[in-house]
Length: 418
Image 1 (cartoon, one colour):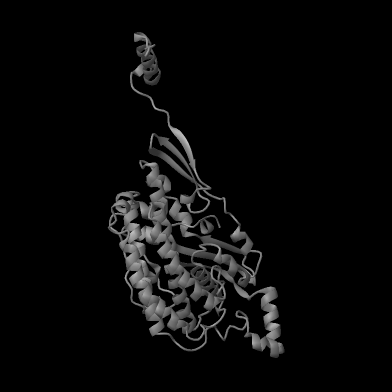
Image 2 (cartoon, one colour; image 1 turned 135 degrees about the horizontal axis):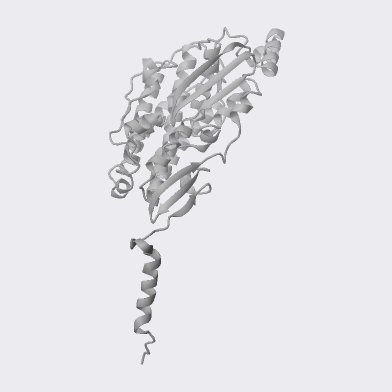
């Protein structure tokens, strides 16, 4: 026999007291907002980003990105070393696309000295930059899919990326931080048969890419997590300085490879994909199409691949002489010694160059007072600018939507913090 110890009045009195405390004098319920910190050690923040969020239940009312956990002072370091010595530091900006970073920095310095590199050098730079674009987008796609629950896509992406890394290693001697580009040229020419192996990769990559995208494009769960989530209007994308796929996903067809061609991009045919809604789903679709267009550019480079030197042979005070000449000629030995110790001698002046990198527009502003070391160097990093829109688009979202938004922006904290 159960004994009931409930007193008829007590429950009503407790409920009444709670209601009175919650509503106050107005008679309306008052809610307390909660502060929640996401990151910097969180798998969905893709590095060391921290989001300081304010929540009203499950709804975000405020989201402030806190950065600086990976700050290394690259811009100040550049002012204390020669132009060539800074090339490896550009690898560590967007470390998913070091070949593209090297290229952007080298072109900026070359424009300072008004140096034009040979057609073969330009072709190799475009080829490697587009391969880096595919590699970066593969990692972004795999991480984004994993964030919203699709595990298999990441494994497929890593497999294709591994094939690219083997090609990078054949060309540069390194898989990850390549340091391949030089001021006035490249570290070395392409090895024999390498272009054929790149062509083989492209042939097998396209059907594999279609299979990867088919796992997500019409996937009900993926669409529920991305369609209509994190919408960035065209006006907001422009106002906040977004670039790259995040800008094009909002319907702005800005691509420097088309609008301000460099390194011979004007001779290649490709399309610039744009979105219509500006949500997470559109940004995913844009990156998928960009990989197809990158393969299209690579094939054109291989078809039109020019002969000739792969470095500026007339830039004696800029580009290091070949190693066999250094070991056999006193003049080349002295030239190599001066380049290593004092750096390439640049004229006084300033230059700004920006390139269309996988994450967006990467820009280098260099001020020179002459000599082999820059007086000032400023980096315009796309991830830093792209993250600035988080406080705008996160408000009103659920906590789970934040994961989708961060994955769709595809940022790298290495270049954000610099």
